[in-house]
Image (cartoon, rainbow, N blue to C red; front, top):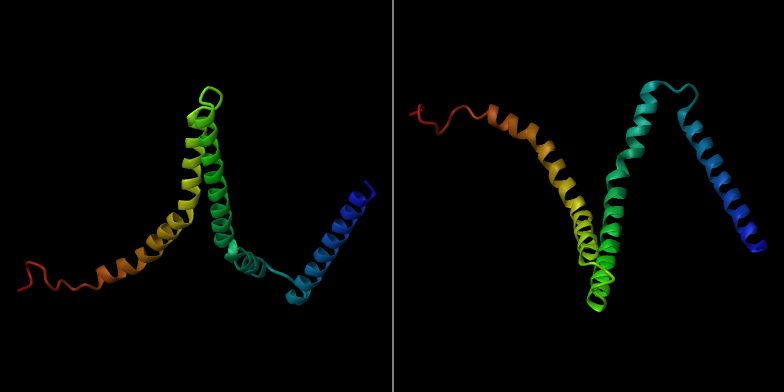
Length: 134
C-alpha cells in the first residue's frame, strides 16, 4: 500500500514538473504578448501529428479487436450454447474497419488535396483533342 502511494506521488510530481517545464518553454517562445495569430499557428503546429496518432490508435485497436474476435469464435466453437457467433463476428468486423481507417483517411485526404490541382488542370486544357477542334 505504501509503495502505491509513493508511485502515485512520484507520478504526480513528474507530471507537474513536465507541465511547468513546457509552460516556461512556451512562454519563452512567445516572447511576450501573444496574439490570435500566434495561438492559431501553435494549434496548427501541435495538431500536425494528430493523423499519425489516430492511425496508431486505429491499428492497435484493430489488431486488438481482431484477436478478441478470433478468441470469441474459438469460444463459440468450444461451447456454441454459451457464446453466440455474432460476438466474434462483430469484433472481427470492427477490427477490420479500424485497420482500414488509416487507408481510407489517406485516400480521402488525397482526393480532397488533388481536387484543386485536377480542377486547375482541366481549366487549362484549351480544347486539344475535342471534336470541334480540327
